Amino acid sequence: MPEGLPTPPSEKMALLRSAAGGSHGVRPLEAGGSSAGGGFEDIYNLGSTGNNGEREYLNSPDEVLFMQVFVEEVGVWMDSLDRDKHFSRIIPFVALKSPMMLNAFLACGVKHLTLVNEAYKDEKALFYYDTATTQLLRSLQNPDRDIVECATTAVVLNVYEIMTTSPAQER
Image 1 (tube, rainbow, N blue to C red):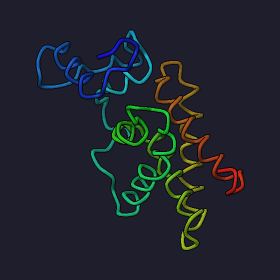
Image 2: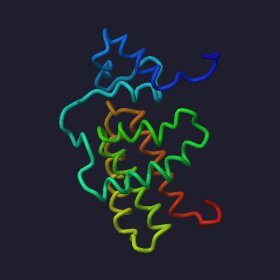
Image 3: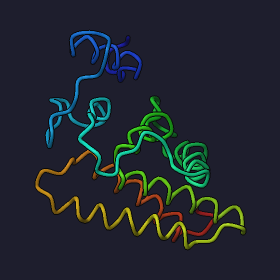
Image 4: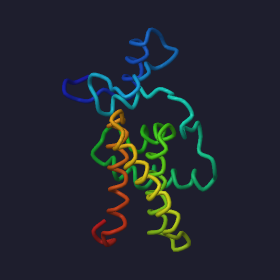
């Protein structure tokens, strides 16, 4: 691998497995902490912290559609300068463990649909956006918050706001 380039996700997973002492799992992230490197490397280390809104799968066909739209339309745009494609390949899986991140992703998916198809209404996008915003504000008040989770959610919510306020020609 040439020096200075990021490690591909498949190699990161192999490195994390070997650091955890085998190939059976990924080293869990300490509660409220982060790895020495910080940033997106933490995403690979998210462990289960109990049933506080975490999911193993999306609950409805609508949620699947909204996430698919996010991944295929919005996430691709967000990843335009990211070789590892975090927003369309990696973070959607992490969002299952983070209700605020999941709501932000769903809000962006619905918002995109409202912009390209008149059959979809803003009420559902606004519901997901309001829910994610409330969860983010609550999380920001917690001194033990996960800063990567909060930052990622804030970025996705900002994309929603850009889709809401800017004319189509600017987008």
